[in-house]
Image 1 (tube, helix red, strand yellow):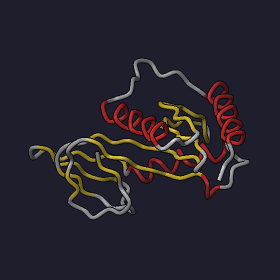
Image 2 (image 1 turned 120 degrees about the vertical axis):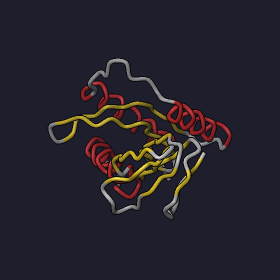
Image 3 (image 1 turned 120 degrees about the horizontal axis):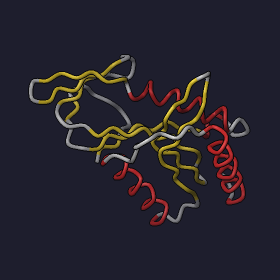
Length: 159
């Protein structure tokens, strides 16, 4: 368990990392799914009386490029790196595939496996928080919307 001061120190380090690594994205705002997740995470912190903070839409520099992270929750239970997807239709994919597929009204669209996508985010956060044990930095992929998974996935939140 992290103490309040430890969480505060993580937050300060995180803000410093953002100041030094943030590359401004023009016109990027939180989409519907990202707003839902942000609201839910903040509600969780309040209702469960967990000391922590959620930071939304973070861009960090890693390996010569940038990566955009939807949400980072820093709390007494750990550091959670959250990738949000807001989809309708049928969703096909498994943890090992590079790409997943969405089928919406007979239109097929491929998208990057969000588990793989969040792996780069985890690596960026681990580099920034190199003083935090790696087992305290967790990856979460959250789907919102009315998409229906046609492939069995484990440990997933659906809103």
